[in-house]
Length: 419
Image 1 (cartoon, one colour):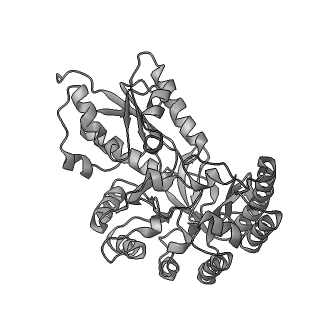
Image 2 (tube, rainbow, N blue to C red):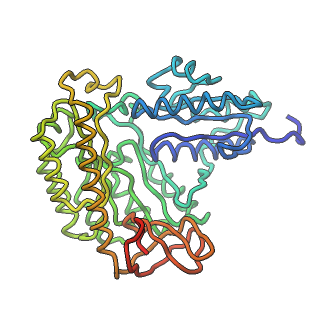
Image 3 (cartoon, one colour):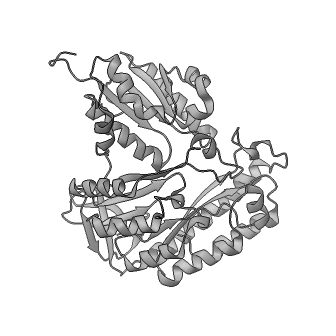
């Protein structure tokens, strides 16, 4: 490629979880280091990558649809389908999506080198790509520290899409977080496929957080979803002592019935989950606790659902993600024959969603008249909006800038915001 030839443009469209988002940011940085120009998904480009998800059938369909849409652009870019959907669907989903290139989990990180040859660019040194600081367009950065899950929950496809267990060296994480802080980020989200399984030799997640707090100046550290069975009480002790760790945890429950949890192959009971939450709240009474719940799992009876509802009513959840069961091909639960009527599953979900909205409002109103800190993500002429440490949306009036962390005392909870 001649020096005066414009750099080929690459766009990445991410479907799915925070782990996918973190990996997309790393891929974007690697493309930039390889001589590409990284642009937005709606911009003209020579390469369009769909970083796919397959956690549900809808997510997989969305991934294929986005690739087909990119293939209809004029001029047509090189369309790449990458990631989880490829691990499950293989070449078949590539054909269905009209993709020019189909790559799985490991090969997707080699895309800059693969495509550099196609566009006449020199092959980028692998160490240069690995050292590139991830490129985020968001206010908070997402730091991938762990990958892989082998828990084998019977409704979940992740063990088939991310089967290789991997944890990032602690020193490498510290270096990246330090550089993110120097570049202006004020909050990171620490994420993984099964975050609580992070392990670097003898050091686990709690030790990683302690080292990050001691060796970086990142003002806020947030944890993504973490499994109940992997949480150590030491995490609560560290969070209590260190205010830089955001006061929010997302701990999936899935069901409040022990019989359903057993069929799901979850690694805790109703009683142990309650005890864990009580331990956390004993030292952090205003801790935000979010959770996931599946309604209508095969075999779930009215009594099972009543147990779930009762536990949700009992615990002060700040946020509920509720989904009616949808059989995912390739999982054990997809072949279970004691299906719950889909309309019943939907009705149960609606009931929990309404309960969750009420509990969220109750949780949020505890912060009226109490000082909170807000990371500003968007501004307008009169103020800005962002998120508190407890992951509550907030509106701040006055002169503020993106990336500011502003302390103020809200006077109301209005339009689903502290104001």
